[in-house]
Length: 219
Image 1: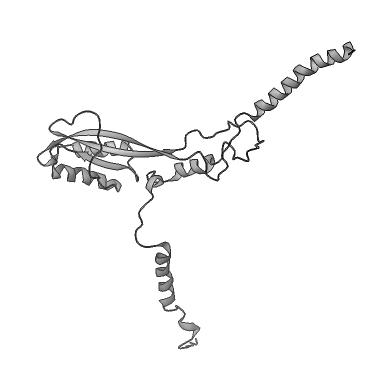
Image 2: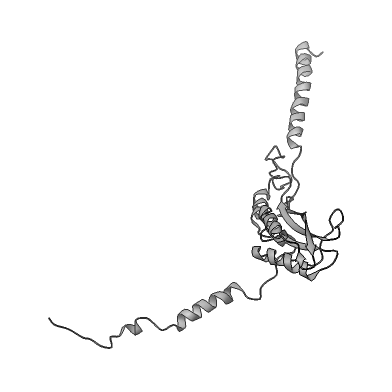
């Protein structure tokens, strides 16, 4: 016959065991399962269109519109990586040249086919479009994993956030993250070799440390 003391201990031991198992399983929840060396947090590139409608005439932009366009470029902080397009229903080369002249002050070349924008371009106007790309890493920082214990040998939930967030913040042209950047045809080593060759071919300033003539004077 079981004593009342052992029955009492069993009644209290059962809930305690269930509670400890529940806490252990709760600690295992949300354990990362990514076992590769690739982070699940990758940069995402978004494009935003900004538009300005300018008045046109037979000679290109109407009087004062180039100054207004330049002011808009200043306000938008036009910079490397931005794309500028002209949406002109008349396809006037004079209008395009006038816009290109303003954009060239910022080191920007006009693009070809303009992107689609909302609304219609009314007659007598042209639409200047700035396409700006922005890179970011959604979901970072990520400290969703509450426990460092990982029986899956997976990466931490925040793995890759620091590196990829810095890359997204520092890249000059976010579109380079999508398809890279075209080369110029010359490498850094080719450029540095020019300086080295010029240094080697230059005549020594001391002429070999030889003295060609001596002269003394007396008072």
